[in-house]
Image 1 (cartoon, one colour):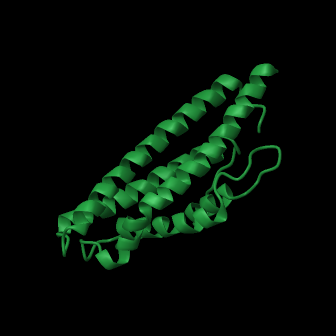
Image 2 (cartoon, helix red, strand yellow):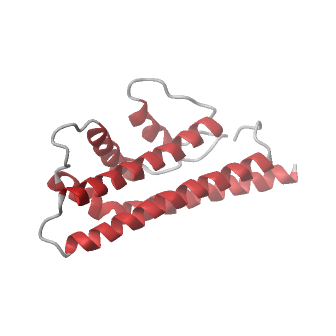
Length: 171
């Protein structure tokens, strides 16, 4: 962990991450509501599909925002290559000695990469305007489990940050 952060700055950073994770969890709850409604219907209308696609896009964008904040605040790193979105996920799986442990494991990174690729398709979708349910339904149905894994792994990382802030308080 870089000495440039003091305990107060680190605790503020932890609070900001928790706030962003709360927003991601709100999106997860919206998707779960969508899953329940979808389960009762034989076919979703275009607006419902577009809404679920928007939730999936927001879910991954929120995660990427959290990871970007960790990269810049804790690692003091930046990503500027054309593949920075993919590289960011990979970097979150790395153990950076004397800086931080892995934020997420490689299995979760692979799963999140599916959401990243979906987000890319949705953002660049001009025609057809309505996303294909068959291409997104596994992401919708798997989101609660992926979110649970993410929160669990983030809680472990946040505990590391809190322990670091406690040590900084003692210095």
